[in-house]
Amino acid sequence: MMNALTERTGYYTALALGLGLATGFAIVFGYLSPDSWYYILIAQGLREGHGCALYGHYLSAYPCGYPALLALTAPTSDLPVMMVSSKITNLLLMGLSLTCVAAALRHRLAAAFVVLNPITLHLFMYTWSENLLLLCVCATFLALTRLTEDPTSRKWMALLVVGLIVGCFARYFFGPFAFILFLVAGAVYGRRLAIRVLPAFAVAGLVYLAYQHVNTALTGYPTGMPRLPAPESPTLLVRMFLGAVAELGWTLVIPLLLAIGLSWRQIRFERTVPPDAPARAAVFLLLAGAGFLLLGFVLRASTYYDSYDERTLGFGVVFVVAGLIARFVHLRRPQSWPVLAVLGLALFSPLYADEDSIPQGLAQLRDGHYRFAPATLSAFQRQGPPVDTVVSFALPATPADLWNVDHIRQFYYGGTTRLISPDLAPDAVPETAGAFVNRVRQAASGRCFVDFAAFPDRDRFDLYLNVTIPTDQPLFGGPLKAKPRMDPALKTYLSGIFQPGAFLPCAEVLALPQSQAISEAVPHN
Image (cartoon, rainbow, N blue to C red; front, side):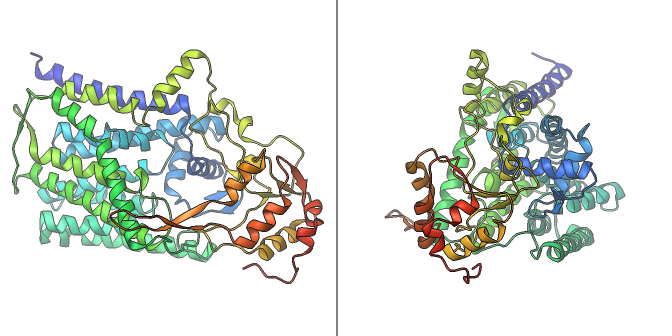
């Protein structure tokens, strides 16, 4: 039988092991999506004094909070260094999130589960702003729980204000979610607390609106980009949402059973009842998770952006499950520490946070088929003479041994290169052939090229041309309806000018009969 000090040391060692493994995997295997590149490049611009901009142009599609933090914590503005330091920044954020949620819940197993589960660690390994979002939610949670005990505390009120304001710059989702947290706080902790913290939430709301006003003044849009209605029918959206929640919930089944099984002799099952402080904290987390899911559904149902997945719904499912653990699963001895359970989570969750990709990556590492992403930046840049404008449809695939590192057009072609790509649904109104060709004509006077390098044969280009988006499906099964992303006339035009793997001057493409047949008088959409 371990004594309390030994158990406590083992508990924190297991937590450190889990986060350390996930950080190591993130550094070794890259974990950079297109969004990750934008965060890092904006952070690089901040360090070099260009503000929240990408290659000199203000960019607010990605809120500036997370890039600013990456810039502050990076030792240099060197891109490979920032790729690695971003993972260390995530480790700092996750450590602070764990500290806040553990102090708020006062439940050692539930607090560990919030962090050491495949959903949270998958988000953690990527350079994504969800890591700052989690900290802001956890800090707000902690401040609210402490203000119920000490309503006049300036320290906890300051933490609440800081958590709310920083959250507004972490992700745009946080603005409306903060309102849900306010409602949950009133429901769980009472009207007196709600009145006490109302000024803090009001200040954060004003900051959020002011930030969107600045974005609108500089870009024309509150979030830096147009937001089109969701193309899916209500029944398909409900079907997608329920499927995603079920899949995410299933992801947590094994770690949940593992945690309970390894702590079986230490735990008892009993529903705690408010006004017990830990019970109210558990209810708060549970309702906050439900609110997270509801808001995720409503926002995606009203406007098109990311699919229902880990990024849009993941924390909601985690909060719900962790809230249930805190409400119904308790240590027999309050002074004991669930060391084996946390150790099991620490070993399992990092390995399978990305399904079986990490074991496969470790096999590549063992066999010598491995390249370190920050040391191979040339693989993500076009090799060739400089260009002024590129008409781009897709980027060549990254090397097979960099399976979880994507790239973006701005970095591949160079930050000063003007990029022209067809406007496709559902991100935009599908562009007509005339509008597209006239955009190319306007840029053809300089070093302008049409890039088909990503398509070595017609079959692959046809896959690009024929992509559809789902629009409708009955809730309980039936045929899936879809519509093309591309305007039919533009599809016909691009199919006619396609040359496998070619990198053609725009003037040569515009001289083709297919281009000559399109009137120059057609405006852009």
